[in-house]
Every structure is written in structure tokens, then in C-alpha cells.
Length: 164
Image (tube, rainbow, N blue to C red):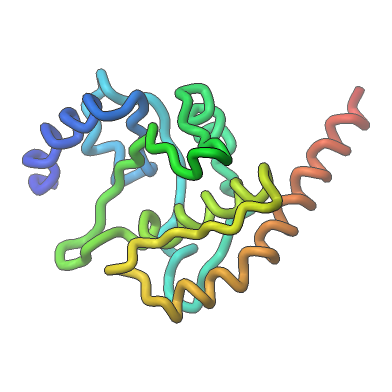
């Protein structure tokens, strides 16, 4: 627990660079001062573990997506990249980056971007954490993840229509 205290001022300084700081639930919230806290998401590290890559349809993080869009963080096709949100998380000592940030979040971003723009081809991982072979293996799974999300969203819309 004490390891988080030296990092809290760093997160506070990040607020100067962005309009949105969000916590990856459980570990990330510890690092964000309450006056800088906007939103949270729940990206599980196990969805990014080697050979266990997954896109959780139970944790679509649509509230987080809504918050990012509301704060102007959705990428435009012309710019290709927009950095308007920072997602804070932590990991155990000795690890460079949490699996949730290095793999699960890039998978989620790719699926969401392809859902919005079918022609979206970009998938970006931290190259010093994710090997080319692992990136290629994950990329091959993206169409399956995208199909799962489309089915879930279609069923949700159909269920909503039937209630009216």
C-alpha cells in the first residue's frame, strides 16, 4: 500500500495534460486524487494473459467509452490518434506494465474502433512489452471479438425494442 503514495503527485500532474483521468478499477483508483477522478473502467489483466487473450462481452466498458467521447477523446479518421484520456492502473513490483494496459486495453480499443469504423486496421501495443508474434496472434482474434460484440449489442437492441 505504501508504494502508491510517491506516485499520487505524478498522476496529479498528468491532469495538466488531459481532460480525463480514469481508473482501472481496484488498483488504479488508489492513485487518483478524488478531485481529479472522472471515471473508471474494468479491464481485467487475465484477458491479456499470454495465450488467453480475450474481449469480455460482460465488461464492455461502454460507460467509460461514453465518458471518453464526452471529453473529446474519440479518434478521428483523419488524425488516426487522439490522446485525451489517461487510464491509471498498477501492477506488481518487477513488471514493466500491467497486462490490462499492455494487452487488454489495446484489444478493447481496436474492437471499439473497428465497430465504429470497419476500415480501421490499426492495432497498437507497447513494443517493448508485447512481441511481434504475440501481436500477430492477438490480431488474428480481433474479428472473432468484433463478431461477439456485434451479437451482444444486436441482442441488447432487440431486447430493448421488445420492451416498448
